[in-house]
Image (cartoon, rainbow, N blue to C red):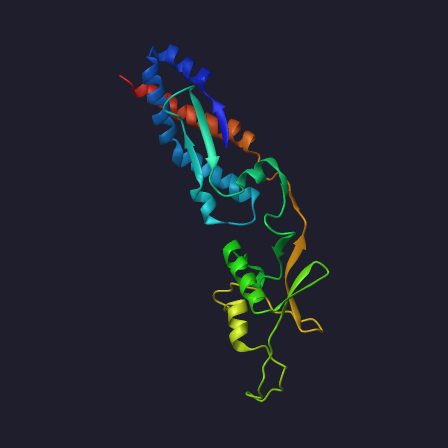
Length: 226
């Protein structure tokens, strides 16, 4: 979240249009509200330029408003969990476990959601199918136990497991199966921490692109006051 004071800007408008303070605040709030389509477009454009992941929730997570009381200021924030770390940069440490699990080898390079990944890991561990070797989490893949289809025993991944583990071509939702000589396929890397670099220059975007748009909208509100 970032807060930018617009008191001096609105004070100049108050003098220019000879309006009362209560009119000024209400005009500022209406101006900020009316500017949302343009500010949302700017924030979405900057977000898509900064992040490779096109998560639609980022588009719906932006909030912009002028508080109804206190100092005249513009408040802008993103409700996405952990978004602040991309603004400031920082280090993520494990919570409730010794190391972080970072998904790798996802199906067709798609992104797997946190909830689905955690659910899958819990299920695989419950079935005693996971193995950790050299800070890599592997899955012991079940192979066929019959000669159905004219193939030898133990030469093909069980169809039911493959579907559950990979999803389908139309809806890939898991991991690719890449067996090593031991019959294991990797799904995650274990790390004690992950350093995130600063990827979103919130201060520059707000001061150079958002504030001028909002002030222009507020100025229009002042011109419409009677």
